[in-house]
Image 1 (spheres, rainbow, N blue to C red):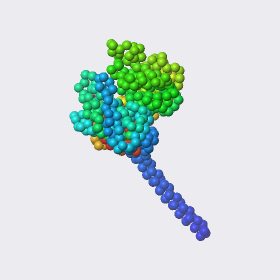
Image 2: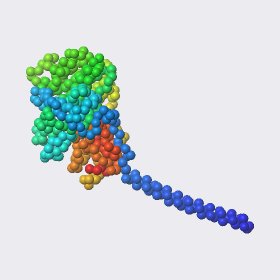
Image 3: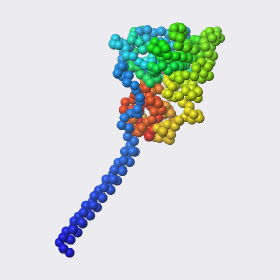
Image 4: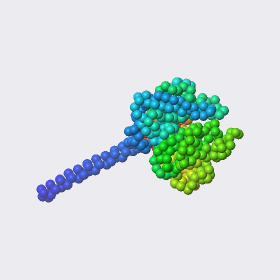
Length: 423
Ligand SMILES: Cc1cc2nc3c(=O)[nH]c(=O)nc-3n(C[C@H](O)[C@H](O)[C@H](O)COP(=O)(O)OP(=O)(O)OC[C@H]3O[C@@H](n4cnc5c(N)ncnc54)[C@H](O)[C@@H]3O)c2cc1C
């Protein structure tokens, strides 16, 4: 063997050793990498940003946080004095930002501590007049306890009715909400049931002032004339605007009330009634009222062939309504977990199994005795905003309130994966 061959053998041996060393290192690192990836998945870290909540850029016109408003005037709207309007002017005297008709204000109220809970609550109320330079108006119905129960009456509405009057100062967040009318030439149908008429009043007043040539139908459903609010003003608008068509629908008229004189339709607002009144035109429908009314009306409009994009609605109560699609099947949302998942409430030290019948995370927390804040229960006020320590949630519909990154609104979401919540 020559010295050159020997040298080659030595070099080959060294290269082999190096290759073995590198291969061992690579395998070790690959194992470590796979182990870390598995742990990371196990930790179910929150997404980089909070679940998307579409929020229009109204902040530029509004204000941040709460602003002081003085009650300028308080006016009962019905004979029973169960519905009351409050006219609000800004304490700082600065101009009032415009809003989109249909939007709401959020109030932080000091209601005084009682057996039902703490002293501060947050509630939302729709703006019930068109945008004006001099005041905002909200119209509030007193929430009575359910018939036959001995529950206390509604805290916020009782506070407004019994304790808020001219000169009082209230803390108010800027107008917000996705449920609003757009400027368009499309004919529009405004349907309000009970106190759900408030955003419709705003849309109606705006339409006749800003787009008097637009065809507007206004359906107001109540039990009888005692619940009908602002009748003279609405009738005066209809007199003055030939494109506005007003229909009062009474589901339980008083014996003294006569169809054709005191009201237009006997019964609840339904698609049969709408088909009788409306032509075959591409109407935009705006609906607000009790959940059962909206559930039946929205499905019936879909059955009638009204495209989804032309049906707009808002619930004052617990979040979304169930929508019926073709074949009476609820659409499966790929984001919502259909299996049981573990939810850990870290502050309360509870780990519980959630499954779809448990509903929203707010319902689930309350049903398990976990102390969480709640206000509107409709994704509007932000009271139930809670930090997500690990895992992901899914929203059934985009909330009006935009949660901070890494937080969620318990009233509007369900688990997407197993979760750790700071509650
Ligand atoms: C976007 C939006 C806009 C809104 N706009 C308007 C509007 O324009 N006008 C309006 O009047 N409302 C509006 N609301 C509803 C409003 O925000 C309040 O939900 C409503 O005033 C009731 O609040 P409350 O504090 O008076 O009643 P809560 O204290 O929340 O009580 C609600 C009901 O539960 C009953 N109750 C109390 N304790 C119990 C118990 N232990 N078990 C079962 N029931 C119980 C009460 O008697 C009452 O009937 C709107 C809501 C939203 C989300």
